Image (cartoon, rainbow, N blue to C red):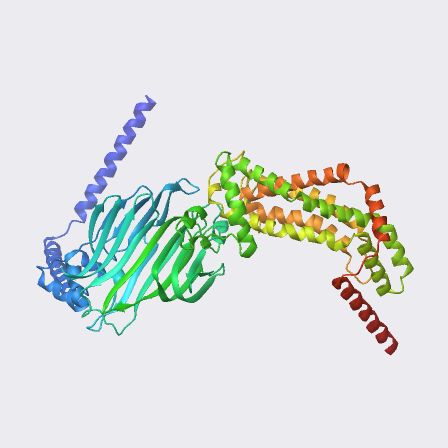
Length: 632
């Protein structure tokens, strides 16, 4: 009964509300006079909108965006276009907006009618860290433009004009012709030739019959702009290797660097590369551009916010007229920053890959790249890194042996060196001279320990350049690592630590622990064998600080670096620890070393030029000090 009562009340409520609405509408219905006024106002509004539309049509300014729909038959439109574009109104009236799609086995390309340039470049065989296809150009991140003056006093930009596309096939070569026409026989043409199995395409800019249209007294400039997309997991790490590289003056190469905003100019430019970490866009010229101006702007201020683009690049290059016509043969490269691929073109493009200058680059080119390519041809890449590390450490084991032998000799000589310092504690120069003489006779100079360490530096730096540039490591997994060219992650942090990041990588931790024990093993030996000398810095204390500072620095610095590099340092330090323990416990015999030192001390040894000069300098310094004390 209660349920029926509730239903009845609801029905009554709805009826009351409906009745109120009907009454309100009836009460507020317009009078006949009001209806007549509303109808009149409506007619007036329609007339006003019609007049406004006619007025807008009469005063509308024709811009490049309006060139999509007009036809030659529309005489008024054609007149407006001629007023804006002069002779190039022919092309604007004939061509509409659109894109031409072409594919090879490596590239998927789109050419825009507006501007005639590449509006989309996809690398078909690669994806980014998030499994999205790699696009070098997409969604208006690139502009290619030629700016020129005309004989009827106009300044035009090809990026605003419409090109007529045609596509033809010639065997494995697809030819895309984009023509900006003055008439059917007079035009400016962009000609692209796309080849199967090749990231490089031929590109020609030429004109026909435009000598009376293009003003030869004004500069013709080619401008190329690109905002580079982020492709890697760490945008800051990728950005570190994203830069403008250019070749000039018959083989010299340079780059803009990593500052917030940089620019540079060069003469006789043969190519300009907008290099990203692992992918590159390059414009090459068969004959050099007379000059070139390049700019770079960093677009990543906050890694948590700026996640789409890395840098904005621009290049401005002059084009020369010959007989009033343009004819410039060039090439486009859109592909990987892979040393092997770039080197295969024989046009110095391998300089785009930052392998290091001088001897460092030489070591990478002729040792590490061929060695790693050989190992990677039959081993998983993580195992290839480990095997390569073992081979390098075995090659340098004699250096570590020399270094440890020198430390052992100094340790054996320590009692005698302490006695010399005590005997001549009031004559520092004499103490230093006798210390140097004893070390020289015994063949235990501290320099003998430093030189092997210096020999390792080129190898250390070359490998530091090699791993971030090794394209083969990209997206190759090993153990828990998903990508050896990026950092590994064992934990995500809910906050960001400056210089460290918002994640924890395991390989940098392992490498830091290994380097700590390696330095503890070697630094302890050094501190025992090299007591502090008066007037000299406390080297023992400095080395002790370094023993703790270096692993911490590595832990922070390498947390965002390629895990392949951290893997190398981890294995390298483990092997170094093993080599030192073997040398110390099974190879070096301190009794034999001591006997050899005693034999060396008996032999007359002539001072070298450097040692003699050092002795003279120390003696001169002591005399000056004594003279100053007497004056006081």
